[in-house]
Image (cartoon, rainbow, N blue to C red; front, side, top):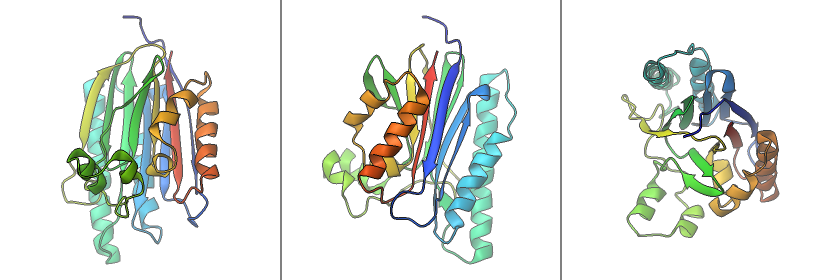
Amino acid sequence: MMRVKGYVSAGHTHVGMVRDHNEDAFLDAPDRGLWVVADGMGGHAAGEVVSGHIVETLARIPPNAHFQAYLAALRTGIAQSNDMARREALARAVNMMGSTVVALAAQGEQAVVLWAGDSRAYRCRAGRLETLSRDHSYVQDLVDSGLISEAEARIHPMGNIVTRAVGADDSLNLEAREFAVQPGDTFLLCSDGLTKTVEDGELSGVLMHANPAESVRSLIHMGLMRGAPDNITVVVVKAQ
């Protein structure tokens, strides 16, 4: 297998066309092989407190030549955000302050996606798109059970209910998927503000751009042109 020489990436977040503030946050750190999207929940600025804490905490974790040790530190950092969200919700006397999270960490050909909630990770390899994450959501459970279709899931009235998130429970159960990276692989991390307006079948063509920033701009534009009822956050990463 050919060696991965490095990674180039770009990211952007937009409030959308309906919401009055942005509760999403992202991290684009190719120098340390780390990319994160977090979609805050709770309203009244509560969600952005949690999503911002996740990104700030992970950004402070120093790189480690031992990949598994780095992953353990990332898990610890997300757990710290979970603890903060639980404490802060009690202090504010609100039911819940939380955030989804999806993180891609890569070192050479080694990579892992960590996630909780319905922010997604995709990989486009040789023009073929694959979803690396599986939504932790009420609607995804219905799809998996065969009760509704993917098309019905996109417009389901309970589409905003997640079954796992930072801040939702005292103990956070992060899901993980490890895999090998090949040169030319393109990764997309995004909040559900994108996936509720742009279909999976449209993504691979946009991700074929040589410049990640062009892919990011195109995806944000597509979401905005379709009404963007939620905040939209997109991070695109290319392996070289």
